[in-house]
Image (cartoon, rainbow, N blue to C red; front, side):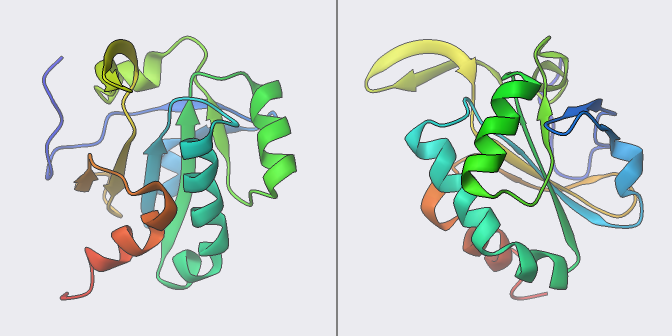
Length: 155
Protein backbone atom coordinates (compact mmCIF):
# COMPACT_ATOMS: atom_id res chain seq x y z
CA UNK A 1 0.00 0.00 0.00
CA UNK A 2 1.21 3.48 -0.86
CA UNK A 3 2.18 5.82 1.95
CA UNK A 4 -0.63 8.18 2.92
CA UNK A 5 -0.10 11.89 2.31
CA UNK A 6 -1.78 15.10 3.38
CA UNK A 7 -4.71 15.82 1.06
CA UNK A 8 -5.42 12.13 0.40
CA UNK A 9 -8.78 10.59 1.26
CA UNK A 10 -8.52 8.92 4.67
CA UNK A 11 -8.92 5.15 4.49
CA UNK A 12 -12.27 3.97 5.83
CA UNK A 13 -12.07 2.27 9.21
CA UNK A 14 -14.42 0.74 11.70
CA UNK A 15 -13.69 -1.02 14.91
CA UNK A 16 -14.86 -1.84 18.42
CA UNK A 17 -13.95 0.43 21.30
CA UNK A 18 -13.14 -0.24 24.95
CA UNK A 19 -16.88 0.04 25.74
CA UNK A 20 -17.91 -2.45 23.04
CA UNK A 21 -19.32 0.24 20.73
CA UNK A 22 -18.68 0.22 17.00
CA UNK A 23 -16.96 3.36 15.70
CA UNK A 24 -16.24 4.21 12.07
CA UNK A 25 -14.78 7.06 10.03
CA UNK A 26 -18.32 7.96 8.94
CA UNK A 27 -19.22 8.84 12.56
CA UNK A 28 -16.94 11.87 12.27
CA UNK A 29 -18.18 13.41 9.01
CA UNK A 30 -18.53 17.15 9.49
CA UNK A 31 -15.93 17.18 12.32
CA UNK A 32 -12.16 17.25 12.51
CA UNK A 33 -10.82 13.96 13.80
CA UNK A 34 -7.55 13.40 15.63
CA UNK A 35 -6.90 9.72 14.85
CA UNK A 36 -3.86 8.69 16.81
CA UNK A 37 -2.07 5.37 16.54
CA UNK A 38 0.00 4.11 19.44
CA UNK A 39 1.89 0.87 20.08
CA UNK A 40 0.62 -0.46 23.42
CA UNK A 41 -1.64 0.32 26.35
CA UNK A 42 -0.03 1.12 29.71
CA UNK A 43 3.50 1.71 28.42
CA UNK A 44 5.21 4.97 29.47
CA UNK A 45 5.08 6.81 26.12
CA UNK A 46 1.56 5.68 25.28
CA UNK A 47 0.32 6.61 28.74
CA UNK A 48 1.95 10.06 28.52
CA UNK A 49 0.35 10.67 25.12
CA UNK A 50 -3.12 9.50 26.18
CA UNK A 51 -3.00 11.51 29.41
CA UNK A 52 -1.86 14.64 27.56
CA UNK A 53 -4.80 14.30 25.16
CA UNK A 54 -7.11 13.66 28.15
CA UNK A 55 -5.83 16.74 30.01
CA UNK A 56 -6.51 18.90 26.95
CA UNK A 57 -9.66 17.11 25.79
CA UNK A 58 -12.04 19.97 26.60
CA UNK A 59 -9.86 22.36 24.59
CA UNK A 60 -9.82 19.81 21.75
CA UNK A 61 -13.63 19.73 21.76
CA UNK A 62 -13.79 23.53 21.98
CA UNK A 63 -11.57 23.76 18.90
CA UNK A 64 -13.78 21.30 17.01
CA UNK A 65 -11.69 18.13 17.25
CA UNK A 66 -12.88 14.63 18.06
CA UNK A 67 -10.23 12.20 19.35
CA UNK A 68 -9.90 8.46 18.71
CA UNK A 69 -6.96 6.24 19.65
CA UNK A 70 -6.05 3.00 17.86
CA UNK A 71 -3.72 0.19 18.87
CA UNK A 72 -3.65 -3.59 18.36
CA UNK A 73 -4.51 -4.20 22.03
CA UNK A 74 -7.79 -5.91 22.97
CA UNK A 75 -11.04 -4.29 24.11
CA UNK A 76 -10.33 -5.58 27.61
CA UNK A 77 -6.83 -4.03 27.65
CA UNK A 78 -8.26 -0.74 26.33
CA UNK A 79 -10.99 -0.80 28.99
CA UNK A 80 -8.43 -1.19 31.80
CA UNK A 81 -6.19 1.52 30.29
CA UNK A 82 -9.08 3.97 29.76
CA UNK A 83 -10.51 3.35 33.24
CA UNK A 84 -7.15 3.62 35.02
CA UNK A 85 -6.36 6.94 33.32
CA UNK A 86 -9.92 8.28 33.01
CA UNK A 87 -9.72 8.63 29.22
CA UNK A 88 -12.81 10.39 27.80
CA UNK A 89 -12.35 9.32 24.16
CA UNK A 90 -12.74 5.99 22.35
CA UNK A 91 -9.86 3.56 21.87
CA UNK A 92 -10.31 1.13 19.00
CA UNK A 93 -9.12 -2.44 19.52
CA UNK A 94 -7.44 -3.22 16.18
CA UNK A 95 -6.51 -6.78 17.14
CA UNK A 96 -6.42 -7.99 13.51
CA UNK A 97 -4.21 -4.97 12.63
CA UNK A 98 -6.38 -4.04 9.64
CA UNK A 99 -6.58 -0.33 10.51
CA UNK A 100 -2.87 0.06 11.31
CA UNK A 101 -2.08 -1.61 7.97
CA UNK A 102 -4.55 0.60 6.06
CA UNK A 103 -2.93 3.71 7.56
CA UNK A 104 0.59 2.42 6.90
CA UNK A 105 1.73 2.65 10.51
CA UNK A 106 2.69 -0.99 10.99
CA UNK A 107 6.31 -1.70 10.17
CA UNK A 108 9.92 -1.65 11.24
CA UNK A 109 10.90 0.99 13.74
CA UNK A 110 13.81 1.70 16.01
CA UNK A 111 13.32 1.19 19.75
CA UNK A 112 16.20 1.72 22.18
CA UNK A 113 18.61 1.38 19.26
CA UNK A 114 17.16 -1.93 18.07
CA UNK A 115 15.04 -2.59 14.99
CA UNK A 116 11.64 -3.96 15.95
CA UNK A 117 8.37 -4.55 14.08
CA UNK A 118 5.27 -2.82 15.41
CA UNK A 119 3.00 0.21 15.35
CA UNK A 120 4.77 3.46 14.55
CA UNK A 121 3.32 6.22 16.74
CA UNK A 122 1.56 8.50 14.25
CA UNK A 123 -1.34 10.95 14.32
CA UNK A 124 -3.61 11.78 11.39
CA UNK A 125 -5.87 14.80 11.49
CA UNK A 126 -8.79 14.14 9.20
CA UNK A 127 -10.93 17.04 8.03
CA UNK A 128 -14.70 17.36 7.92
CA UNK A 129 -14.82 15.86 4.41
CA UNK A 130 -12.78 12.76 5.28
CA UNK A 131 -9.46 13.93 3.85
CA UNK A 132 -6.13 13.76 5.67
CA UNK A 133 -5.36 17.34 6.64
CA UNK A 134 -2.18 16.81 8.70
CA UNK A 135 0.12 13.91 9.56
CA UNK A 136 2.32 13.95 12.65
CA UNK A 137 5.03 11.32 12.42
CA UNK A 138 7.25 12.58 15.21
CA UNK A 139 4.81 12.69 18.11
CA UNK A 140 5.84 14.48 21.30
CA UNK A 141 4.01 12.24 23.77
CA UNK A 142 4.04 14.61 26.76
CA UNK A 143 3.07 17.61 24.63
CA UNK A 144 0.94 16.12 21.87
CA UNK A 145 -2.08 18.42 22.25
CA UNK A 146 0.07 21.55 21.88
CA UNK A 147 1.76 19.91 18.92
CA UNK A 148 -1.68 19.51 17.29
CA UNK A 149 -2.89 23.01 18.26
CA UNK A 150 0.29 24.62 16.91
CA UNK A 151 -0.48 23.26 13.42
CA UNK A 152 -3.56 25.51 13.36
CA UNK A 153 -2.16 28.64 15.05
CA UNK A 154 -1.51 30.60 11.86
CA UNK A 155 -4.81 29.70 10.20
